[in-house]
Length: 323
Image 1 (cartoon, one colour):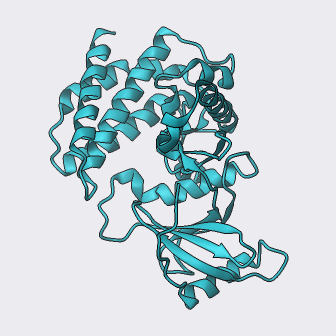
Image 2 (cartoon, one colour; image 1 turned 135 degrees about the vertical axis):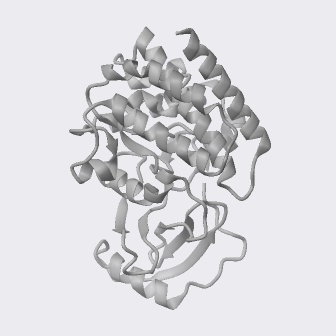
């Protein structure tokens, strides 16, 4: 997922020394930083850290101050740290070593976690046999179920709920999440059918009232670029938890069009119902708007991806209008 650059730079001594002060708390024997590689192509600043015992860690720092961010991206590092803490010692989940929300040690806020080597599913998918793909999807379904076993008292972001905030209903929590996304779009004057979106979402939102228990869900869970596969073509890790919320487990991307293997891994609690179908339309609408909005907040705009997302949005709105 994060291959080192061909010509890695030497680690800065000051940063290495500061990291060692953290590492001493987690390793029984004396250890030092051998090398640090910057990893390009990410919203956050990523660094691969190689230790003297050949262990590899991932250092993830907050985005640069000049990076345009949508509202929820301002709390993504905090969200990921909280999610990793909740899911510690679970298979395929990288172990969190340290989170510095104030940037006291390095300057920017950062988290330090174990690095999981592997190839992202989107890069290896065409090389998989049917049996290998089924095995990976079954493992993803099982992992989604294990993640969802974590419950909370209220719905909303992990930070809000931890500070006694959040909402008592998933309907309210989802509408707040969606409205924040629409306001991001309005901030940069994106051409979208705002009135129709708000009308259809509010009209269909009573279907969300059936979700009574706030469960931990990673909205992007199942995104092929975030699924790591090892050399044996088996699931070995998930690379991002920044979209975790307390909500409906079926909002995870993997349940948009789940394969029989995903359903088999998740278990018998998955069932298709009319209101469940309406909720999926709401989630599809959210994902489509999100995909459009992100194109306007990134340096390299993908026109093809935007067109695809807009088509998915119009399809979801048409289906919601028919419900």
